[in-house]
Structures are given as structure tokens and as C-alpha cells.
Image (cartoon, rainbow, N blue to C red; front, side):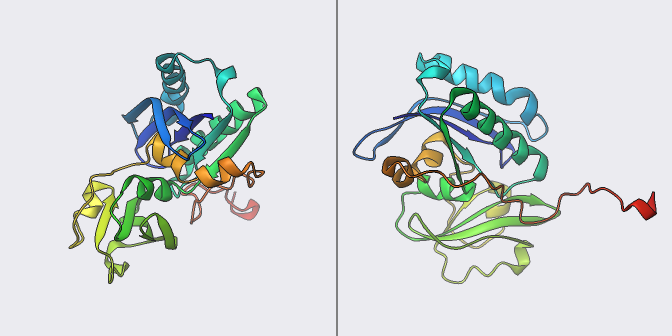
Length: 215
């Protein structure tokens, strides 16, 4: 199965073309990752086209799309999910959402209790806890000082935030195309109808419409 993978839940804009084999093996055919927290909308589609060109494939060769559903900041996350939905709709293929933290956990191969943290801005972090690759708590958002790390043996995700905890750090900073597809490989292989795309904002956006009485 040939899939397009997209994630814009972190400052790293990630795209890739991934092959999911019948035995569950996940292999990247091409990938792009660019750190640009303010330019998701401008660079995402060109990165997708570059990934397809590197893999020697056309959009029509894709069999499904996988997109990181966050948690992440409102604007960036919306760009990735809307683009994924538009590609899938145009090609008449399914789009599968996955927790972006699950994708990071997939790439951390250590069989230990893992904490994944990413930047939530406002001096907060998004986080989830894993036993191996299985999520056992989260995703949540809170201040780093309020995050109970008891029992965790390893941490991954945003380097600046991971360094603030007294835990060994796995050098997986953001979702990869392989991690995105791998985190939903079982659902993809089952042929199950994907769940509706639901972004994991975890809190209200910074910009909200004022009530009519306040205008």
C-alpha cells in the first residue's frame, strides 16, 4: 500500500510517501521535513509534490492519506488536516488521522515507559505516556511543572522541553512519515472505514469572535 503522510502539529512540517507492506513493514520512499512554525500553508503542498517526485510517483498512485491530528496549535494543525482531506477527496481515497504523539512514540523503539512532549506554547506542553508504542495516558496539555513523570523511563519530543525533565532523552523530535503510518498500520491493513478527522486542539484557539454585545 502506498500512502501519503502529513504532519503539521509541531514546528516541523513533515511530508512523505510511505510503503506499508502486507507483513506490516513500513518503509519511507521519500520524505521532507522543514522547521517553519509560521509557514505551514506556504510550504506544505510544495513539500508533498517534492516527496512524490522523489519517489517517482504521481498523486494517482496513492492509496490513502495519513495525517497527524495533533495535539498542536490551531492554525498549523488546521493547515495539515485540511490539506490531507483535500488531497484524499480529490483522489477519491481514504484519509486516516492519527495522534501526532503516537507517531513520535512509534519511532522510539525502546521497550520502556515513554513520555512524549511537544510545545503547546503559553509555556505549556502537550504530552502523552506510552508503554512501548501503546498509549496509556493522554494526550493532555499542562505546564511542565504540573506534569507528573513518576514511572516514566524515557522522554522524546521537543528537545527544549524534554531537557527540562530528569529523564533520558530519545532523539525523536517530531512525527516522521514512517511513524505516522506505523501508528495506524493495523487500521490501514484491516480495511476498516477511517474515523472522521477530528483535530486534537485540547484547548480553545487564541483568536475568538467577540460576542455581539461587545462590538
